[in-house]
Image 1: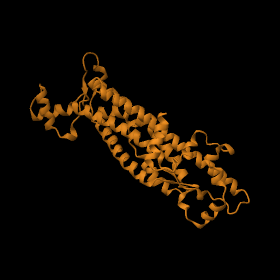
Image 2: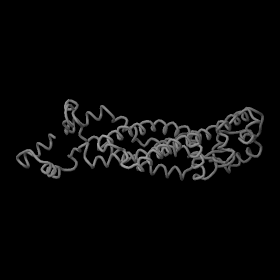
Image 3: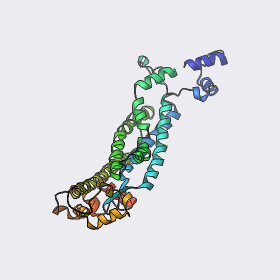
Image 4: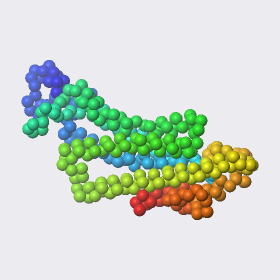
Length: 324
């Protein structure tokens, strides 16, 4: 409370002795210089807000797995409409994470040496708060807040020479899974702070049941989305293998890997290849038992036309797959 003490000495001529005087003093200090009490009602409300933001962000990230779709026979593309939707709401969630980082730089902490009796002494010095935060959870919070998928899908992939649907698929999957870990980890200290302040995360039995149901649905959502993206990768792997076989044979016209991207749909070279190729027939999941390449548990994504269906049907099918 050094800055409060100095301000009080010059403003009031003495230190505040009562809670009301301290509150009046806080109102006199500019908001950008104020330090928050970790047990204050305002910070408790913010902890609930950031906990909900974490849950929303954990639901949003696996939606990137649904971006690759079967756009036409023998090719894949990116669902641009879904990409814009997810990017917008994920950017909003990222802003909340950056606000959370700013708040933690201004949140007091209990001095470890004073944790003997009672609550302990709050350290209000902003420099000490910043040093402690930088040495503890700042790296995890920053990793959770960075807009990595947005940068990859809108800047890195379009600038890449190999910006095919499969390349975007693998890159986004890696980035989302990599960032999912810190976004999941930051929920635990927030839970602990809420429990320490209020005693429970959910104030009623119904809200507790809803919270547990959301966590269960989240696990099913992640599992279903992962199953879908692995199915897409399995289909592309079959196309790639069959395409390479065709390139090394006397088949004419020969397969070109770029034909597997829907950006080439309608071009005369691809149309000529599509009329004579065996790539699509050899990678048909309906005839899975008659081929060397097996789809296994991913065949349902193609025998039930999940990969080429509208997003609502695709999402709820994958969610049900994750639940079951």
